Length: 422
Image 1 (cartoon, one colour):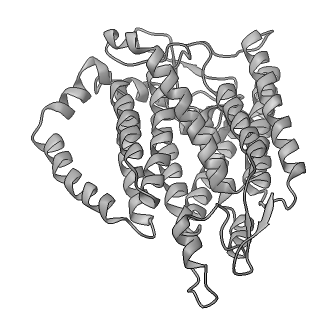
Image 2: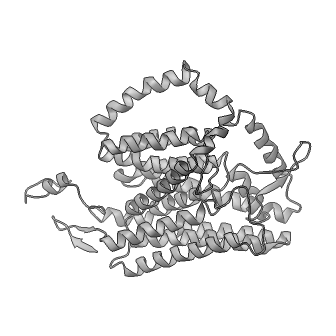
């Protein structure tokens, strides 16, 4: 719905039906990307879970398509991110064809492109920050549901999902992205509910024992605060009080050391096991063509030698890209991540903190966790930030005064003919 704003500007808002449709679509996207079973990877054949996720993905796509078509004035969006994702999937599928097993990779490639297309349609239909609110709120809702239903898993040392069987790192990723949204909203309009919800989300990240998520959510939040156009005094005072507390926890308290060295954090030695898979990935290609094109998106584990285990997952999106899509795919991922970060920093002052924090969080976790270029919530977050900040969208934003309903104080400042423009 388009309504004229005071002062001669156009302000786009969403009616209740559009908001519910957007939330439903985002919930379907999150449901289609989280794990429905733990430790199982699609390797071809008739897989009912993959088929069900495909149905959910198609339903989300149709909802987004309907929203984009119903929009009276669609938001201009660039196609660079969608082209990069499609090219990546095509390269990986071609590599799988060379390797002799193209069908599983083709199925996963179609899923990835379908998810990216759905996000693109949502951004055509709705303002970028509106989509971000719905997407990250949906991730937070699913994460908190999984955490609450999986509280009994704490007896094993790390919090995992219950009703939604999320692994600890997946659960931490969902709650970490939701936490960034809460921090962004708190910087804009501080409220007590944001402090309470943020503490709960941070507590879930801590209880999962995910060192990668904890190590990325803190600098991501710092990036968000640094890039904020204005930090309220209450937020500034809270950050100033938190700095010495964090300094004590890191330097003087055994809390962080216990977290890193205990079973909850899986021990420092897990990095050594990761490097075993990384080393094996360098020697994995069986031909020069496969070195350039990869072996397909369905390759999730790699054989290892000289260890008491025979195979291992990659535990790094960049190593995964090297094996799944070869050197070409690795270059595409690098271009996507770099362009997303550059465009996020160049976004409008009100939004750049959120988008930059999301990119830093996703790319930071991707160094030690896989799934950045797969049907995962991290993939949704990255393509959302990349698509929302492409130059075409920025040029459109520069011609509009605002794309989210104004606060009462902003409305009051526009009330008189001689009032100052915000």
